Image (cartoon, rainbow, N blue to C red):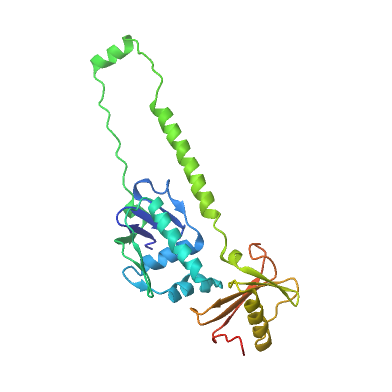
Length: 263
C-alpha cells in the first residue's frame, strides 16, 4: 500500500500517522498534524491540480465525522497547512486560494512506501593505519583537548527541543471552533450559543426553529446555532455538556430550507 507522499522532492507526508517533515531528517524532525489539518492536506494532495470547493471540503473533512464548522474554521485549517509545510522546510506555496471557487494544490507529488524515499546516510571511510603510524601512536604522548564539537551539538539539540515545544504549544493552543460562538442566554433552561453577534436575532431564530421543527434542548444542555447564508440552511448542534469535555455527547440537525425570521 502506497501511503507516503513525497512533495516537491523535499517533504514527506504520512497521513496514516499524521506526520509531516523534511525528507533528509525524517521522521526525527517530523511534525504531528491536527486531525482536520491532516485530512484536509490529504484531500488536496489526492486531488492535486484540481479545484476543491468549500462545500466538498466541509463534507470530506468534517461532516463525515458528524461535525459542522464555519467557513472561518476552514480558512484557519488552510492557514495551518501552509504554516506546517513552511516549518517542515518547503519554500514554495503549493496551496492556492481561488476566490469564489475554492482551493487548489499545485505540488509535484510522488507516492510510495517510506523506504522508497529514505536517503541512505554516507559513512566516511577511515584509512587503515600502517605499521609505522601504529608504532608512533604507541610511543608518542597524545595532547588531550576539550572537545568542542559535542558541546556544540548538545546546545543545538537543546535549542531544537525548545523550539519544538514552543511550536507544539502554539499548535495545540488554537481554540476549538465552537468556543468562538457567542452566548445568547438561556431559553427554556437550555443554554444557547450562536455564530451571529446579534443576540436578539439569534434568540428569535432559535425560538422559531423550536416551534417549526422537533428541536429539543433539555435544561442543562447546550445548543449551538449556525446561521450561514453561504451554506443555504441552518445548523443546530445540541450537547449534554461542554463540547470540550471528552465525555460530552452531541448531535447535529441541519435544516436545508433557507431560514426566514418572519415565518
